[in-house]
Length: 143
Image (cartoon, rainbow, N blue to C red; front, side):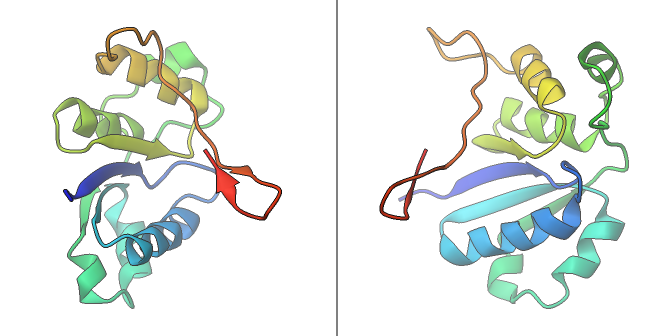
């Protein structure tokens, strides 16, 4: 079985690293074949990793970037001013083959727009997909 590497926009969402870093650690604890590229402000990320075991730290790579796409920016503004942002750099990691997927809790319109512009879709696919876990009757979840 091969390792899966995901690019994570750590700065996305309302809370940013305070929620994305603990969630990342939990995902790495549950899947030993997972590696993460963390895109965001290393000054905010590093203190949240102080107590993480070395076995998990070894599967994390931090890519410092100080710029973000704000949740309130319109799509055209976000696209024009996205260079060097955590979201764009995470998508570019997929574009360059460094990661197999990108995860962000940030500006959904910007994420979809950047993915459509930067990534070549698979044959027959016209636009990027949004996915979420749906609860099942027996307490599990389904994508």
